[in-house]
Amino acid sequence: MLAAIGNGSDQRAMDASDAHRMSESDWQQFETLQQRLPALFSRIFHDQAAERSVVVVPGLSLDPEVLAKVSGARFYEERMLSMLMLLRMPSTHVIFVTSVPIDPAVIDYYLGLLPGIPGRHARQRLTMISTHDASASSLTCKILDRPRLIERIRRAIPHRQTAHLSVFNTTEAEAKLACRLGIPLYACDPRLQYWGSKSGSREAFRLAGIDYPDGVEQLENLNQAGEAIVAMRQRDPALRRMVLKLEQGFSGDGNARLDLNQLPADADAAAIVAALRKQIEPEARDMSAAEYCDKYDRDGGIVEAWIEGDNKASPSVQLRVNPLRQIELISSHDQDLGGRSGQVFLGSKFPAHPRYRRQLHEAAMKVAEVFVDKGILGRFSVDFLYCERDGAEHLQAIEVNLRKGGTTLPYQMLQFLTAGRYDGERGEFLTRLGQPRAYVATDNLQKPAYRRLCPDDLIDVLVQNGLHFDNTRQAGVVFNLIGALSEHGKLGMVSIAEDLDAAQAQYDSAVAVLDREAEVG
Image (cartoon, rainbow, N blue to C red; front, side, top):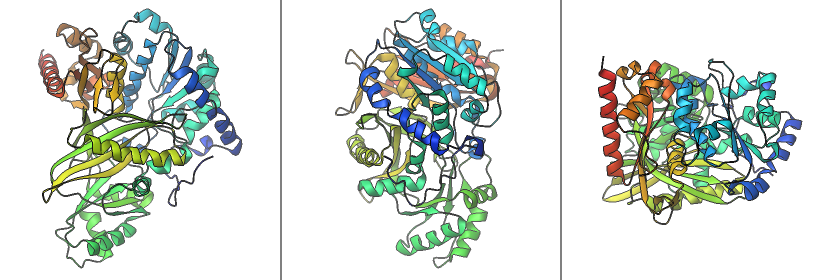
């Protein structure tokens, strides 16, 4: 039974057209399919030799206006190619669906990473399917628009009763696709997505009893934001800066900052709204203040106090609620942020700094307990902000990402390549042989010169310069977003080593090699 989703949940950002809305009978079918998951999890998920099928639909069903501001967004489907590492299990089949075909060299690269599995054996258990549609519509909607394609995906699933659907995030469209395929969805029920919104995050933190910034949620437009800022300034006259967040923003690109220093202390809501329209600083690349304000008026969001302090860090915790309603602590890491005011996700370092690692785990577990009570399933992350102020350390929860994200791929690569696990008590990752591992990762390694390289060129550079991941040492560099290389000069990279210093040195060395090779000729 679903728990109530909260007062302000109008589900405006759910990316499903009217044609893809769920009917009452669809929801009944969906709930019946979801009831398979506990038995599947108990019987299949931990048996390496069990026959299973995983249908991977890696599209980002997110706000298309904000997504359009992300360089190379069309290629972000490739980030979930880490799921090909499931083929290390000899009886697992993966059906991977994309908007446009992926270069065979990229697929060969990932299959070549599989430890102990011949590439030919893995390829026989992999089915790649494409919609051949590069439009901005969500991948899931593209599939739903093509009944024959759905039937082709269904025929490609050899073990329907032990199959599930894996997606980046959930909307009604993903639930509908699960129904059309006749398999359960291992992810959050889209009717609970409120808890992954900015307002829902704040409500979850309040229920969990953990610290989070002063602010106001469930705002419908800028006028309400102006009134909220007036109230916040009255509570804290020393407030200097504010951050506005679109309700369904992601990776920081839905955020914008307002400096209050130029406004009189007694400025009313109208004056603040006027300032917002002229002075607000959106984080999203190429988004103007006017565009942001128009979008806020349409979609609503929250306002929060900008956290002031020194030695700031942005740690995050990945967790999962499995089908048995058990909480799994997956990892904690530090995020690298950029953008106009340092709110856009660029990459991560694993593990998180030891000075706040235990606090992170404890606070995130409290949020996870709230989510278990609400009926939430699957992977999510909780982002925090750490700083030092007035001689004290402060750790505050910032938001929840109720989906896979930029930290999912690097951790999956580490886990799948080493067959290791995260030791929550020690706060570190241990390989199967008990050796510690760390990584430095990015989704935003981008330089104009890299456009000179095609995917095949990159593979040559990897091999010729000894950058390929070494399964013997269980260390090395792994690339992703390879398809974006020639068009956008953009790559993702994960550098895995015995500790963070070694991982950073290896990362820097790999960048130097790429710079040199891209400049040749």
